[in-house]
Amino acid sequence: MEKASISLEKISLDYDEEADVLYISFGKPREAKDSIEVEDGIIYRIADDEIVGITIIDFKTRTKKE
Image 1 (cartoon, rainbow, N blue to C red):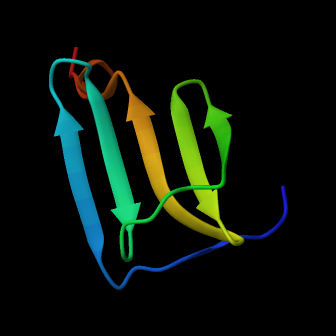
Image 2 (spheres, rainbow, N blue to C red):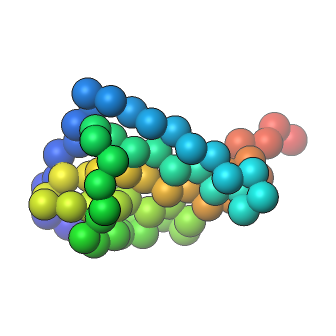
Image 3 (cartoon, helix red, strand yellow):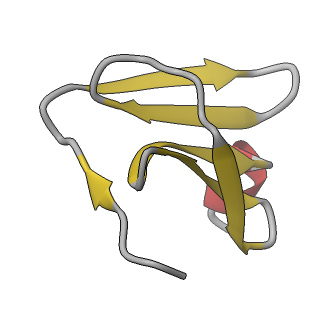
């Protein structure tokens, strides 16, 4: 993977409880032009060599303490 930067100026979190998906957006919300699944169910959303967000599928399931 080529290098990509992240803008930490503004971070937005949006959780879809029904789908159990957490959306993290960096900077001003914008549409991704590409995405990379870096781990099963963890997706980096990329635009213009910058990570604009991260999607985490099965978020609650991943964070439950056993």
